[in-house]
Amino acid sequence: MEKTNIESAIMDMLTPKLEDIQNRFSKGEKLNLQDFNLLLLKTQYNHINHLDMKLDEVSKSVVSLENKFNGLENKFNGLENKFNLFKTEITSKFELLETQVNARLDTFEAKLTAFEKKIESKVIEMESKMKETIITNMKWTIGSIVTLVAVLKIFEMIFS
Image 1 (cartoon, rainbow, N blue to C red):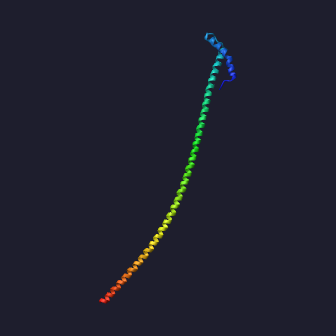
Image 2 (image 1 turned 30 degrees about the vertical axis):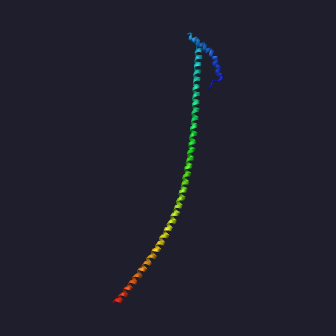
């Protein structure tokens, strides 16, 4: 706290009287009760001024701490905002990744289904060709056997 004009005026009025008391005391003269009270008043005034200065220092320190705290709070809020932004970005990236993976999986499933159908049709086609080949081979084999039996019967008839 700063001195007011009244305090300064009071100290200006008391200073000559205090100097007189100090001179008398240094000479070894006896002091009366009013002198002691005046010295006590000056001591208390000095003590109050000292406490006022300390209070000013503490007040400034509190203001400084409040400012630092506000600065930290602002930094924390900024960090929280950055974290929320990061969280939003990560969430959107994962959603995009999920969409892309799902699209690729759908494409892969469609291609796999088409491939399976193609394989099935090839298997059916191969089975059909194998059947035809087996039937043809059987016809030829049976025909060959019949021809061979007929030729053998003819030889048997001729040579018997």
